[in-house]
Length: 236
Image (cartoon, rainbow, N blue to C red; front, side, top):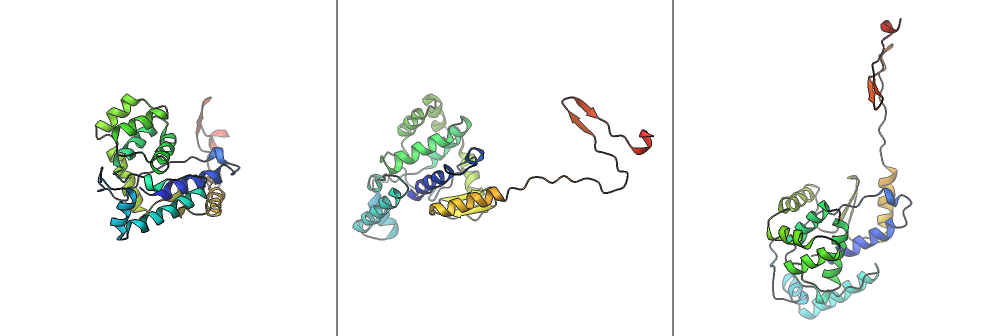
């Protein structure tokens, strides 16, 4: 689980809040697992997990966590990375896909980020996930059914495959209108430029009409009925 994802999300949201056309922008989260084989319960603290993964001392890992906490504060977030619990995020990803079918993907994603990086909750624990789902207004019984099954696993894997096809190797990664991309939790001005470029580059469709002389008008149907085109011969 990458702490830069929440930082990048918040910076993007802060920029969008000032964007004149923010109500016309739709956010969509996609799943991308950095370690699909991560243990559900490693029994390690976050510092111990990082020390083992990056071949450093636990003290060095704690220093890295302190730097991450400071970085988060620049986005208005009060991280407690030392309390973060290393786990497998696959069930959390499945749950957010289900939340999307209930119109609550954004709310659950925000709550998950907060729970993981600020509150130190176990995002691989089924009971925790059910509680978080209920807190954002989702049916806890339905959430229980989803987590007890393999529902939405295909959607998670499809997102992963799509990301890999786009050349994504790390997160956070932001795609704007499938034309512009930002990799990493970049400064606000980078997001601002990307959003503006995507907006300016919108391509309204261009009407194409026949260049042939005396060409018939195309037939059109509306709520009022269908208009049959008249050729020059028919109109004489």
